[in-house]
Image (cartoon, rainbow, N blue to C red; front, side, top):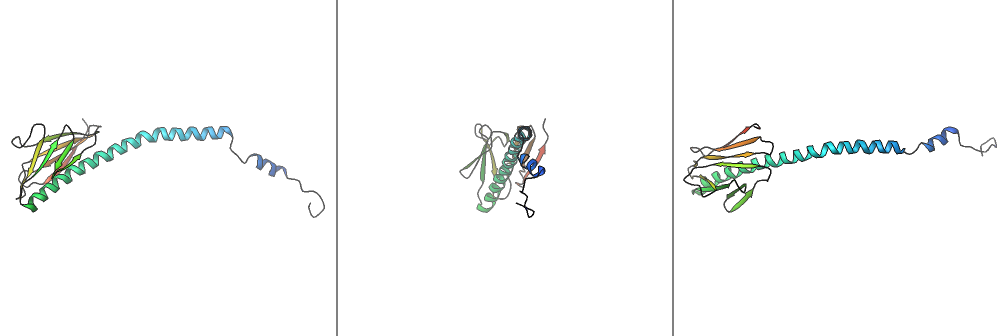
Length: 164
């Protein structure tokens, strides 16, 4: 009851607010359709981003393994070999085998005298030089990186190339 003695009745605007408090089925369907469209566009680009990250990490790993082998050769005073198996997409150094992802392809260029069957050997010498050669790593999109080992200085460098 109010101060004047009249009973309190809800106003028309209060009643309409209570009726409009939820979402209609049409609004829910529109929101779900937009969310589905966003997911349909986001998932493929996320997978492409993930593969790109794995490819870049593979390149970094190969460069790191070669640099580590050169460092070990200079510090230990003994030649160090890195065995590169392109069929298995793997590199072996000091008993550790590192495998590259299935989404990349690998080609090795090494001195014929050092190679064993299908495995290319890149040797780093104690004075800092190397047998020379390199590895090409190509992503599924066709873009790639050519990693080269200088025979005189044993330095490791990389150059990208575009998709063919």
